[in-house]
Image 1: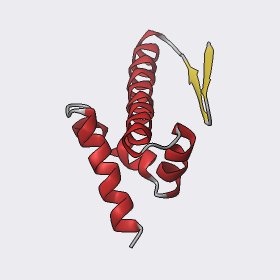
Image 2: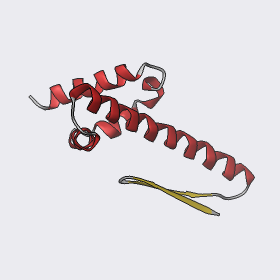
Image 3: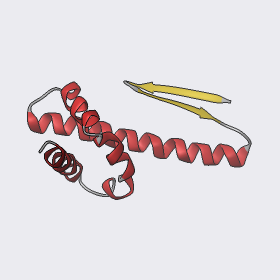
Length: 98
């Protein structure tokens, strides 16, 4: 069985096998979805903090590869306040924009 989902520029395809595979795939899918939601919330909060549109904020996040960095650091960042995630993004932009 396959399931797919699209959120903006992000697309996901989930292929389910037997019960064990299905459980593992669902766990991966749930984790991937949580990572994507953390990115979305960080983009929206960054936009709010800087008085720009979410599209402009997403453009910055993509330009500086922040979306991937947030996803890579998910295990730590999801335990923090969202403001820490935005501070993380601001720090990356400052360092790479020099």
